[in-house]
Image (cartoon, rainbow, N blue to C red; front, side, top):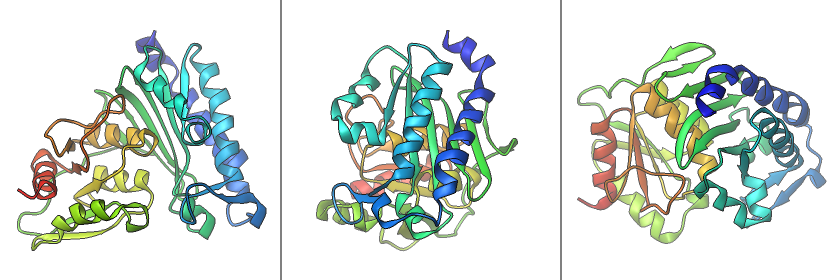
Length: 274
């Protein structure tokens, strides 16, 4: 069933993603009223009416396209954490972050995106990263490569001898222990900076615009789409215990992403303190 869906209906998913952005997100970009922005866990963890409405829109559209599928969305899990368990079940799962980079969205910064991935038993089969304010759609299908606006992209490898350009988990969202671990990247030969929208940082790795990532949190909606995009562009990822990050299990953190296997391994080893 899934193979048939992937062969037949990917364009319908793209249409659903674009429609959710056109109807629920972009009309509110730079138009949000104060009462349309709320805090979740704290002042930097924001949610807007656009996040909620876009996730509701996508939940209806995606489950209609693939009957019997479930949705694990950021806002649904915030309301009911048991929703996350669908990632460990047998039914196909849509993993949705309706507005990745809500902080940027609220600030009027165009560097935000909608993330959708389709997974079965933890295997990510297809993904969509749509930055509506930038008019960029990145897609990936397992075994079929990565594309931006229809053009194939490849991550390549870092330039020999150049500093590795690494985006790391933003300090606003990290614990003191996380900060200590990420500080291991503060070494000669590595140029680290705080990440913005996780989805757009993954896209930069897939394009070879930066060399790697280091993340300290496991939320599937932030990582699923980007992990497949990077993999299909030729990149790699690994947790600090040396196995790949998966959305259907607990993972050793932090985990590293790189334009190629050697870069991912180097970042992982630095995070380990090796």
